[in-house]
Image 1 (tube, rainbow, N blue to C red):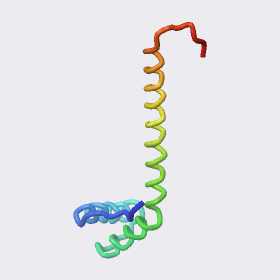
Image 2 (cartoon, rainbow, N blue to C red):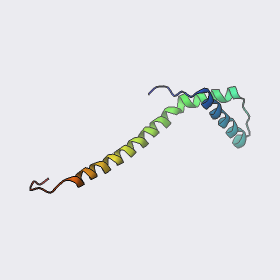
Image 3 (cartoon, one colour):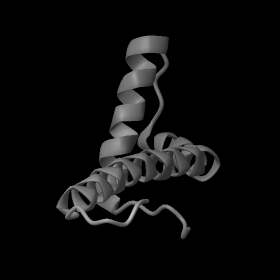
Image 4 (cartoon, one colour):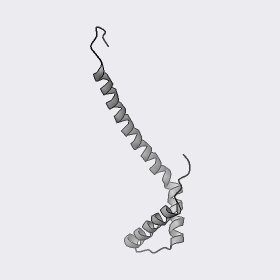
Length: 84
């Protein structure tokens, strides 16, 4: 996995969301620099957990689709004298 990197525009949006959350929920105001610093910390320290969860979810979807594909292939089989 490469490092998680956000564009400047994405960082601005995410930092704004952090600022809004802290102000609304904790009545704590931080500036843009501090919000970006906090965002960098969260991304570095917690991002990998969210990344891995996304992979687990993707794997589950792929496995389900593969099972559906396998079932569809079995339905195409023609009857023969061979037993499985």
